[in-house]
Length: 114
Length: 110
Image (cartoon, rainbow over all chains, first blue to last red; front, side, top):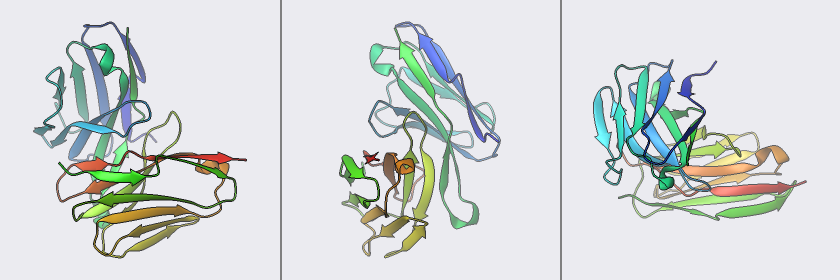
């Protein structure tokens, strides 16, 4: 059963056209993350939430915004996508159950910018 | 910010050979995690190491955390084609963020 769900799996947008990526989780975890992963690179953290507390990484461009209306859902808004924003966007949750700190990644949304 | 160095970047092995990837930090880590990402897939959690000198095994995979909690390794014995993918270490330093290494991409030649 999918625990972290991302929609859509593939998104094509035009240069400068806003796009929203969504993430939902069935795990009821407090912490959610958005990562950007470009080809052959490590995931790069964009933001994270602890409940509704939003934390922006210092080098995350202003072009990227996020919303978390409730525990289950989190959105990534890219206001004016550029060619350099083409990447895989990964959502993840985090849990500390049983003394083990685990991140659960969704399948990702692959964004293409034309 | 915290940096985690991971080597090698690429490793090509013949099926049946062993494989090791190393992760190093200049600062003491609260924990280290390992993830596997198959081609076209997303990172999947493998294990977390917390204690100094900790060694954990999962079938053919052996994970170690250094005594100083500044380095870690993942060793795969007798690689199989199903082991293909990129292996990432991710370091925690007591906050909610994890810092990922650049990953080691493993290719297994049948």
